[in-house]
Length: 227
Image 1 (cartoon, rainbow, N blue to C red):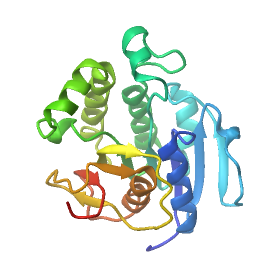
Image 2 (tube, rainbow, N blue to C red; image 1 turned 60 degrees about the vertical axis):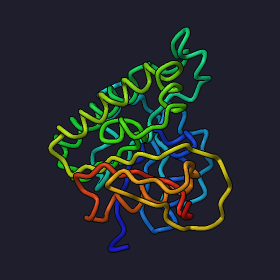
Image 3 (cartoon, one colour; image 1 turned 30 degrees about the vertical axis):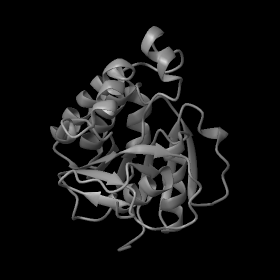
């Protein structure tokens, strides 16, 4: 790590958001955890600030972004995908990824924040044609609205004018991996294992908030073990 930074995590109470906070704190950064229910997080560090707010509210996001060096976005819909597909999300706007990211970008431009790291999904954008038929069918039948919003989110990021990194993990797991090993990261869209722990994704997101080598890249993330 080159230096300690002030990093804002948007979507902090989701599984990947929580893991990202832990990874950043371990690296010595000062972290602001932003979520509608940020107070539900356990605050065990004087370098962690909990901030309630709605990512789809531009004013909330503007206040949160000011004063930070980097922003990590881990927005998503933590509801049953079948229910979301049939009836729409009950607690979260269907366009939370794109709308929230759009607000983050506007605030970053206003306050001069340079680095944006966004968790997207493998099978979107540059890896859209890299999925197997089972995953393609799953995306089409069950996740179609969410994937469509993620496509829009990626376009917002690419047109943002800030130093951006798009992270595209394959199948996420909640495996409690105690190691701090980095996942396999490929700017060519290559995959080793077709699953990756949220902790592994978090290790990459924390790195990308500062490291220069992935700026302007879409990075596929998968398990580090060779197939």
